[in-house]
Length: 169
Image (tube, rainbow, N blue to C red; front, top):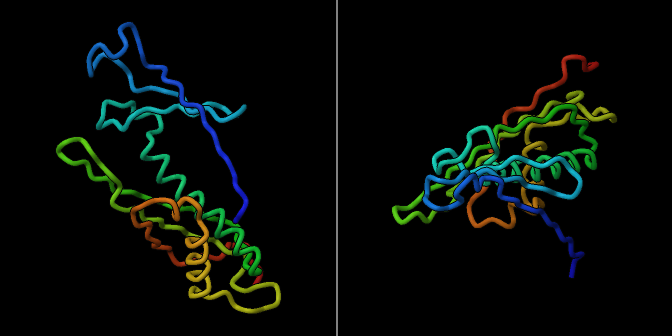
């Protein structure tokens, strides 16, 4: 059996206002997510559910968590394989369906990572191919704790890699 890790977060509702939940429209969905001594993360519901669009929704944070987890595993595996990554972005998106009764679930999340390499080859001169990067993404996906924990598909749609402009060739 593997190591067991525990995580905790405090969620504190800050939107009671004067009358709390006297009606569906009487209260704010605003809250804070607090983790240890880190700065609080301002949360709310999605604007479609009367939330504040200037705050993070749980749905956005789920998509972000999947993208973060994949990135961190990709960077780890790239470094272990001698692939020097100097830039990484992801324009991840998720689709959620809400049924008539109000029940809902995510249908899928698509990760769209774009990797910038320090050079088109490793230090030993071996070229870094798009197929190798695709395999690294596949391995990262297999390792991502969060992707392995959700019940909907997490798809990968990586962009072709880039090479840093100041790379020595």
